[in-house]
Image (cartoon, rainbow, N blue to C red; front, side, top):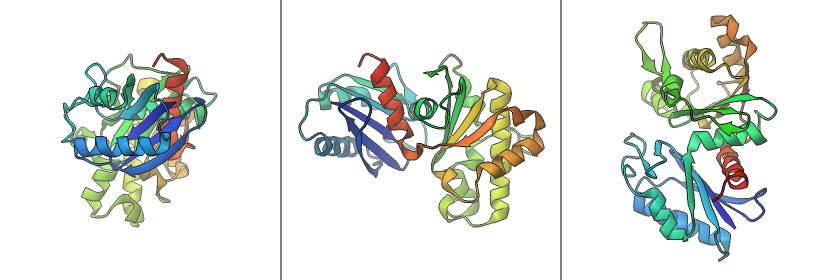
Length: 270
């Protein structure tokens, strides 16, 4: 049996798989206290696994230093920074642990089992508590360009001052700018501004990486005001050359990261 997980800014998904194809999963709020979060993960795995032997663990978390198995300094998980995440999981489950960036896992899932299936170059962008993204080439995570994390965040708004995409369209930014959470924002004018900012960011991605398809996931994409139709229209109006790239919404939703973890289990030695 293998354990798979996806730790997001607001919720954590945990699953177990016996056949590397299907899985049983559970969701819990992400605890920002590192030690308490580990205990909650352990308790959830124990309930799902029912005592079965764990052969390996694969999971995603944002701002990851893969070599060290810790999180970088970043605002969403301040109490997790520099904590020995991989080492703690190895000790907890007595099994090898493979950690990957959460957006990269979700992108891998979408590319091989979701909206990006059949495309050679897939870019996945998660519009959630923060902004994350990855490029998948021929079914593999492309980590060749370490600057992609920054490329995906930079846009140039109307005042020509470089800003981060995350400061315009993430759930955190929307709440800070408009005073309500994205799911409660009903102001259509505000959503036009958000849509246009996202379109500018997508154009930067298209120019830099020439994807065949961009798949958009994350909780903010669940807003009825932030539709693929509106995003594509804004993108094509502002940047006509971008229309060669397909824009689609995630079909795996919150489970995309778990499907990506399954792909790691299938093709890597855990």
